[in-house]
Image 1 (cartoon, helix red, strand yellow):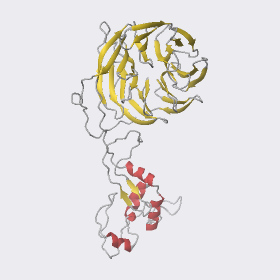
Image 2 (image 1 turned 30 degrees about the vertical axis):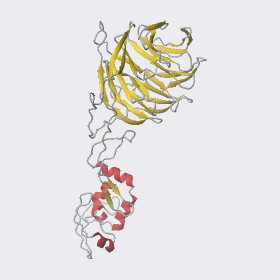
Image 3 (image 1 turned 180 degrees about the vertical axis):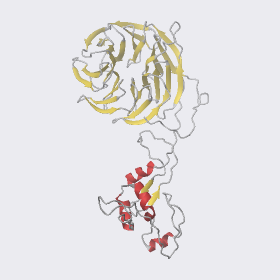
Image 4 (image 1 turned 90 degrees about the vertical axis):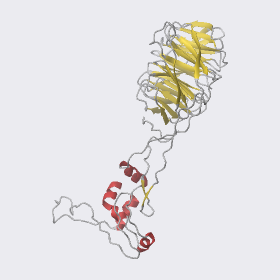
Length: 470
């Protein structure tokens, strides 16, 4: 409608409504915002406008257009103004934007993805005049917070297969790993020495977690089993039966005795820790569910799947609240920020940040072009992504700035192809970063104490950042 109004009634829209208005305006020799030429107006003189009118049309339906039957009607000033008033402002802006040149695209974190180009034209319904918005200066990416680089200082060996999962206990004295050698090993965090090996799984152990509410360790694996270990006796005291295929991950609810597991059978299951009962089966994904996370606030359960979607679940009803379909490839990792009400998801196409509770898109973190298996973040806003090719990228959470890239050498005797990172975690003090890798080792990183902003400056320029649409 705005385009039709512009093409056909453009000259009429700029006619003075009265002689008084004409006197107030004075001489005008400029072009209007549409590019139509305006005729000079002299004070005190009545101006005549030449209006070309609309397309020819017959007087009634079914009448052919001939030289005798076509009628050329001139739109009146009041009719043109009524059209302008009737046209919604938002629609006029959208229609005007269709032909406007696209400017630099940038969205603030949390802003809508459908950004409006600068210089949009707004139809003022009060006096039917066109007013062009002043083109605002495009915002730039804020300067990232400086983070010291992390360096490798310990490599722990002992597993005979790929180390697939890792978890640090709440007291920060030891950590636990699960491996493709079917064992669960407990290590001293300070010295890196092996404390205990637990056997019982008959296939690769894919997930481990230590409870903060009880002396229990939970594990799951490709043998379809979910086990609860009593750490006082180092024995399995409960099994949770129900999954029909390999169990890829698990998490504990922070405030209630609920365990959530995800599986290759395209479901996630909620278990009562004490009674072993299956409270809910979360179905809706169409491929393997690779990761699951719990939090105390709504939504309490988040799952990522190989079907490229992320689902936010209602724990009470056991149903999907929101399905996020922005990723184009499988989602294998999800991490929740410990302080902000946000989370991130990892996929080969991008790392994406989201805002709770509805999963509003914040921004893309692009550059880690690999299959991302794991994500972790600390309170300082350091986001770590680990990938299948052995690379590890460290990001500033707020701005998405990639401040460090690490590719540690594989264990001597291993193949170069065995350099994948399957899991990573910060310890409770967040001073150490542990990675579980395909060369059968656990690598421990810590911050470089000698680094300063001068020795490791942030290579950042206040330039306009064009963010990819998802």
